[in-house]
Length: 394
Image (tube, rainbow, N blue to C red):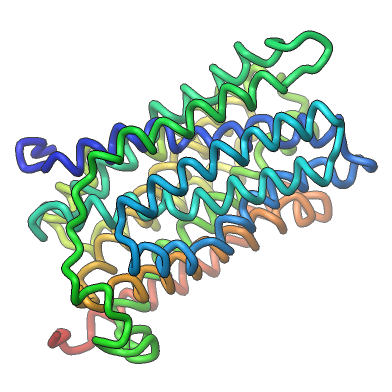
């Protein structure tokens, strides 16, 4: 990766991402466990995680609106402080054994994650256009550290307060998610004054009817949706249905996370060399490989191969979709374009995650994998269609 082309903003955003990403990981790691302790019914045990995902989708438009008026730095710093307060509410909810207050805390953490998802756009805006895909990849690469930092710290601090397990985890989380507020206070706003004027530029309808804009949203949305759909179902399928140990299930999830973020070392370079469409197709091939493997092997190794391929496919499609999106709008249009993109992408993720457990209980691991195939073929058709359209002129 051409690190020499990174500005100070990109480095600050990468460092902040390490800590900001712990909010998502700790909630995924502990949400179901704490939910099973606090929930009035076992059926509701995974509701806190669902609330976080819904919170992320709900926060996409407000995040863009706030930053369009106040700038990136204000939005990111405020979101970090808000996330820290939400984590403290989570600690209080666990101490009080209040399930619905805990759900509210998870929803609030999700709202802050909507701001964190905009780190990738801020990084792309901080470098020359040809290095934007690499800057986006660097933000995702920093997520590897956060993926291991958050759950490990939460596990170490879970018994910090006697007789109230996991309160300490959320107190530690409050400190971790607050760190970006300190780091990003040094961020330089790259916004031009006229860019914040929501009355300039093309309308949402004009933006959303561009072939490459449609393709960008579909690539990121389908990649994120399939990844969340299958990742959410994996622990239940592996441990509950197929009887693999929790240890092996955890190892598979950890390697899935590595598969999600490690390709960011070279994804940006691949996009610059081969173009957006070819890297998207490579992502589709990786996801088809995941689905094919799931049909023939449900051993620990089979799950490992499937989930690593799932992570790689997500990375190629999400990074490429984001990199393509930023070529579809002018500076004065970026906030409305980014808001629409993230609302669609994370809304699709929320639907996929919420439906995963239900569909798995009705069918099987093999079947839910096959349910993903039509979406990949729809994306292939969209790539073919977008390539046949005349070059954009804006």
